[in-house]
Length: 368
Image 1: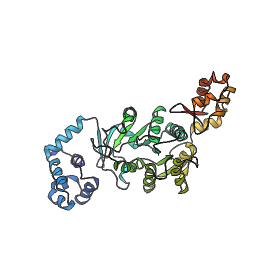
Image 2: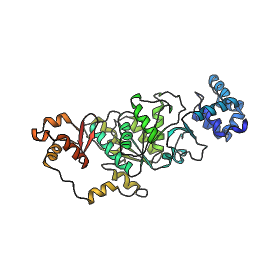
Image 3: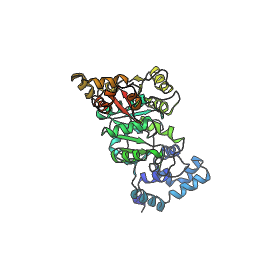
């Protein structure tokens, strides 16, 4: 029976103890050289950690051989993959970040953890301009083979995941709760799509509720997985800037999309640019930093090499009214002549096909 339990299974048993935490587990590993050795010498390990009685009792229960085996069997029956730092296929880039995770719980295609990726983060309340920037940049970056990593939150996170899926790209959602917890609940459909066509990961064991303190922690994993972070809108003090700080600490590249000087959600990216983040107005600005990995953006090349798409008079009339920040279709129609109104939907479709505009949620359209 003992031979069936592997080092990674002892680790799993400790990870499930509420109140023990990864820092204490790592301290044990550093002192004893293995998790199993710490378990064998638990009396001394317990004295070393000076655990609260309740936590110590929970550990003693979880490290009984029969309990570890039952946890192993329950894990294998579930639809959750378990990767830990002891595994050869644990993401190498996460091993070397400060406060690196001990394990990842996964749903989906774990091969995405080993592919070049970029984190995309930003405001939970983005403007139509921010949504348009996110959608456009993400589409082009994913078309070049970059995996798009974000946090599945409202706003730019959700836009980044959705734009990637719509362009048949690959995306990774990093959760600030257990992998079996869908948060926010309105992202249930998006969660299912990422599970089916991308990857969901969390360092927290299944069942862990979405506690506020866990979300800033997970930001270091978003940046740690990636070559760099792209910030699209964010207030002066926001979670997206926490992710950018993590990226800087980890030696990752930081990119920021400029916005209106009158917008509060532009303050974050603008401050990052002042501090040395690269200003991004096209996906080529990102890709040129990684030219040793990616060729120049093909879609940009095609646009430069090919003929400029011609617009008919109706399309020109529609384009003149649309703003870069976004214009609602009702406002657009109210400013058009009766003749142009009759073909407004056709004109919008043609303009989008020609790359002149982007469609935004809620019936908004914005110039590109």
